[in-house]
Amino acid sequence: MAKLLKILFIPVLILCTSLLFIAATHKEVAGNEINTIVIDAGHGGHDPGTHGGKTNEKDVALKIALKLGKIISDSLPDIKLIYTRKTDKFIALSERSNIANKNNADLFISIHCNANNNTSAKGTETFIMGLHKTDGNLAVSKRENAAILLEEDYKDNKAYGGFDPNSPIGHIIFSMLQNAYLDQSAMLAGKIESEFVDSGKMNSRGVKQAGFLVLWKTTMPSVLVETGFLTNARDRLILVSSNGQQKIAQSIYRAVKNRLTELDKEKAKKEADKTKAETESK
Ligand SMILES: [Zn+2]
Image (tube, rainbow, N blue to C red; front, side):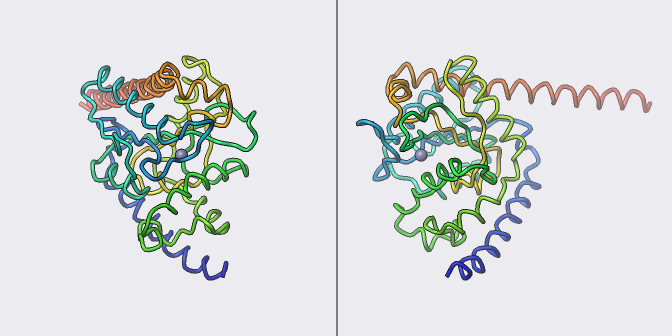
C-alpha cells in the first residue's frame, strides 16, 4: 500500500512542482515588489483548529488577521489587501492559495496558533515550505494539514495531488517540495520572528520549514505564522487578549514594512547601477 501511494504520489507532485516553477518564471515581479498582500486567517466554520482552555484557534487567528489588515490599510494605504476570510467560515486549504494566486498577490501570510501536549511549550514560530528538520516541525504541519479531512471532497481535489494526510510516507515526500519563492519567504519569516522578539517582547522559536498544503501552491513569497501556543497558559493570555493580538499584528506589520523598505532600497540600487552603466557606455 505504501509503495502504491509512493508510485501515484511522486509523478503528480513532480508535475505540480514543474508548473509552480513555470508560474514563477512568468511572474518575475513577484518577490521584488509588494503591491498586494493576502492575509489568511487559519481554519474557520466547522474547523475550529486547535484549542486551549475555552479558546479556539480559528477565533484568535481571525482577530489577529483583521487587526493586521487594519494596521496595514491605515499605514500603507497603497497596498491592496485581500482576506481569505473575514468571518467565521470554512475555506478549503486549496482555495486559500487559489485566492492568492488568482489575485496575483505578492505576499501570502497565513495566521495560526500552535498546540502541544507539553503545556510548557511556548513561543512563536514562522514556517516556510520545505523539509522539516525535527519531528516537532513535522507534527505542526501534520496538524495544520489535517484540516483537509474536514473538506468533503479532499480525496477528489486534484489540487492536493493525491496527498493523504493519514499517510506517513505522503508527509515525507510532500515535505521535500519547496516553494519557488523560498528565499523571499525566508527573508520575511526571519523579519517576523525578529519583530516578535524586538518589538513584541515575545519568545521566538525561530524560522522553521515543513510541508504545508496551504503554502505549497502559492506563487509568491508565503509564510505560515504560529503566533503562540494555546496550550501554554502564558501564551494563551497573550493570544486571547485584544492587546496581545494587537501586539502580534503590529510585529507582523513591522516585518512587512521592513521588507518593503529593503525591496525599495534594492530597486533604487538597481536603477542607480543601470544609470551608471548607461552613462559609462556613452
Ligand atoms: Zn492552524
